[in-house]
Image (cartoon, rainbow, N blue to C red):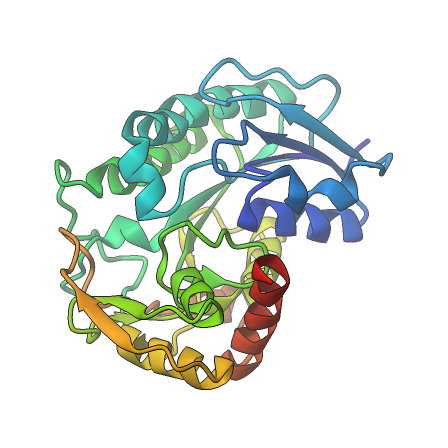
Length: 312
């Protein structure tokens, strides 16, 4: 039981992939999720395993896990604009109350504690690319503020427990990630583009498509997270793919890949939508010896095949 960990958000996109990885590394995994955005389909293949337990629970309420824990990975949170605009209070609570409860559990168990932070802590950045030293440009009362500030508070609370209680912490700032198990209707660009192209619908691009993102395939991201967890580094680390492309280019690549006749249509850009996004991954390279390996063409193909099985 010395290699027993708790992963919150276990039925989500990233959480379920993390469960797979830690199980493959010989850990006993306790998964926890309240299923407001997660799906049991993502972890159905794990349920028969004796080294996997699942708790249907909201971490915004008191969290109890029996027996020892080596580590806690807090990945529970609505993570796309369509979710946190619909569930602003739950988003704030999982980042604040949920983090507080889990840090208390880590203190009791003597466990390592990792949080899933985000590139959204940088807001609509005035520094490019974004390094971990950049403090961000966030509108705290804008529609995206409920997610941005929940994550910023989560980092502050985690660091406070490290400083004052000696909790061993890891902070991963995750940039745009894609791959199998993404929700089709989660409102993010790539799931929308793939599903629209497969269904023969027009591709909806917000703004003029010139805004940029840096898309990292999920296997690469999980590798970076695992390496950070195993390291002894306690300050934030960006994990993402530094290759930056425009949303317009992403849409055009998906149209070519899917061989669809879909046309691109343009809608108004949402309030406070970041215009640029590119991680500086110097820390990850130097500390973790990590670099993304999966080329975008390969990652897009794998994601396309996944969405085809879901939609057809």
